[in-house]
Length: 437
Image 1: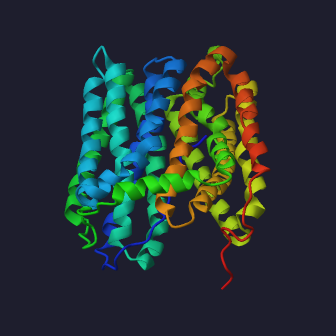
Image 2: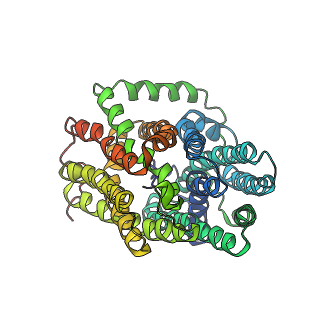
Image 3: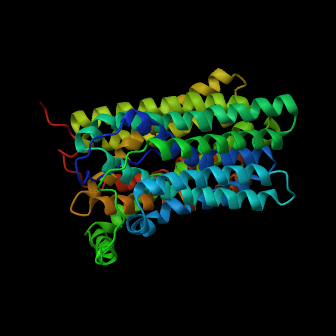
């Protein structure tokens, strides 16, 4: 299963500004955007599993952490009205660093579960707001020409953040636990490392981020909120809105449940139906091999859509997302002991997911196309996050009652609604296809 893919921005720069050494800040900006999301969505699950929290509680409470990404379109005008995007980016990176430091501080306490959840909530809201500010700043600081030139770089470093967090930091926590026998101390070291890293990003971006003239507070925009509400009305005025919302909410119905239980499944011993991997092995197989396969699938998916369009590839990509869930049914049924076998199954599943998820993102781009594309795109991604949050909350409860094997079979069954809805979608045959030179 996958963490959510990076959401591309949809608007154009308002003014042509001379880029101020983009190589000095574009990679670090999007590396800093990816890490908090990985920490909230993935590291939190591994962290709580290592500290003995039951699967039901892990799934329920970490799924609630999606909420800031669900509702972030509602407070995006605040970022427009108050302060500059540059100021928001720098301050929010400082807030994320503070949240990581406080998270490490409260781990040894007797109320660690409640207190660490509070820190993850702080981090989630700061991260979701940082996404708004960082994407807006990117559009203001670079011309359209330079936006296109650096979009590949920003995507690459977002992926690097996923590998560093989901792979490297999980591996680090596992190795430290093996050496010391103290998982709390190991995770304290991980979160202190992240706190220091974000302190460095805070200082670095305070120094190197350019100051584009168009990056101004929204003073005098008296019609902003009225216009913002109008964009919501226009989105929901679509004739096919019920079908669109149904597809957005069900496309990841299976993944939303599985993503919360994959790590516990990999870590739990055979007596509980798991594979009994160490935390370090999970970081290697799921967080490194898996993320690299996810990235490769996404690149291939983007290429084939650009060649033949979304309509041609919608069905193959929908099936590519859902059918590889059978890899986890195989792992739960056979419970292979070899790490290579487990990593290969994960790689197949993640490649299929990355390949197929491209169609989902392009569908959101398609329905957002129009005069309010930025706001409509944000609304679409909000429903995408809602489709991850609600099913994920129940996944631990379902797994503990079904066991891992029957749970992953249920995950496969949960993909059927989106397959059915795909048959009713209307896609422009030319949409997404790159024009021949």
